Length: 296
Image (spheres, rainbow, N blue to C red):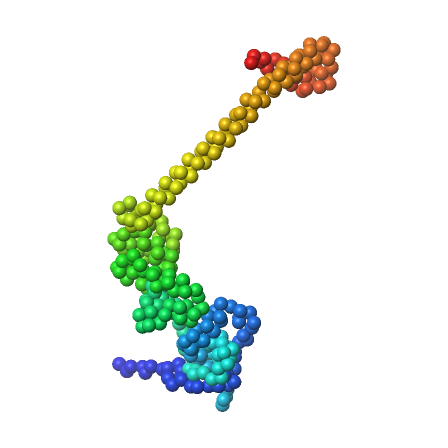
């Protein structure tokens, strides 16, 4: 069987090209230059130089179309850099050379930062290169703290988020592995799914820190509920006092009103008028006179 030779989509030797010879295939608008992505590219080039070479295609002598890397080249122009090493494509399209974009997982980011720090790169410099707060670098550095090696290996190549990984700290290593396996079987690496599995864990599988946190939260809830009940009881007592204070006056008013209405319906001519012209009103008055007890 004859082996098919490997065909490269670009020249293996990068070419140093003046920026003036590079022709963009898409417009770089002011809106694009205001995006965080462009700011991060600019900061990275300022701090550590260009990491990924642009991809270009020669259209005529001394003229190259930019296939990939428009924002990087714009950042170089902004920084006053006049030339750049480029990969020269053998095809007039970026797809064949840049066929896959591989995004790092949070676990891989952790390892990269840990390796850089161990090689002497300060966390502050990494933060400046990525144009992020140094606290985010600290969070990525400490991401795998209190997570067992077996669970990390299971989740290394998955799309699990940093928040989901931190959620695993709430259970003991044995349970971390069980939850990691459950997420892989379900193909669900969301924070909500992981949190549900954590909360469904038996008490002895919870980490000591999380168990104490839960107990403290429960006590806080109980104390808050008690304070709310006390407030409601005090409010009820105040309302009762108002009713007690006004009861005597209201009862006296009721006696006077009932007596007046009793005299009205005791008059035959008034009763006849009410029954004839205002039957509903007469029924209501009659009901008050007959049903209200005057016993204190």
